[in-house]
Structure formats: structure tokens, C-alpha cells
Image (cartoon, rainbow, N blue to C red; front, side, top):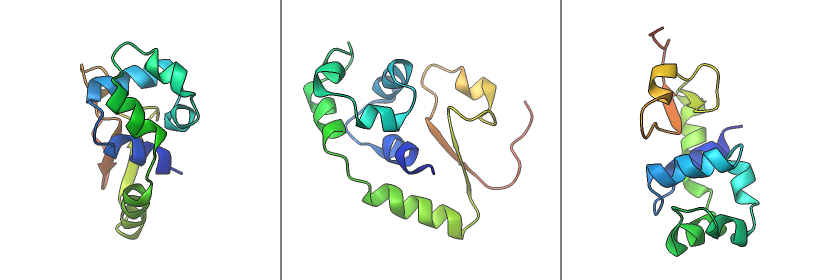
Amino acid sequence: MYLHWIWFAELSGLSDQQKIALLHRFSDPEEILYAPKKVLTEIECMTPEAVKVLLDPDFSIAKKIEKDCRSKNIRILSIADDAYPERLRNIDEPPVVLYCKGQLPNI
């Protein structure tokens, strides 16, 4: 369910700023996966190296993280989830995925 989000969050070769820019352009990481190279290169902050990382996805790490979270009862939240803390969502470079155990505080 969160495989694409975890993959996106764990991508090396993309800065948090680039990830947020992509999420402003696309609705979620799965849409980014299917975006044509031409569209990706037109995004202002995207470098050729970053585009290359997006065009050659490797889900092995994301699959392991998702499996580990399930087995340890760790909750995964994407920045698109309603339960994602609003104050965190509004910082300059918010994490695109949170891993949590227990209840999130209501702040």
C-alpha cells in the first residue's frame, strides 16, 4: 500500500527539496514513476542525475522496509495522509514518509 511512498522517501540522489517539488507537480510517487522523461526534465529543480534515478526504480529496499514495518506493527504515514501532522507538513522540507509506533500527539 505504501510501497511507492517508501521507495520515494528512500531515494538517494534526490534532495528533499526535489521530492517536494515533484509532489507539487504530481499527486503521488506512483504518478511520478509513470511520468515521461521529458516532463521530469522540465521541472526546474530536477537535475539529469535525479531524473535518471527516477527512471530506474529499485523497490527492493522499500519492500524490506514495508515488510519490517508490518512485522513490528509500525505505522506508515505519507505526507498525503490526513493523519500526517499539519505542523510538520508546513515546514520547508517535510519528510514525505513518517514511521510511528503508538499514537501521534495532537499538536
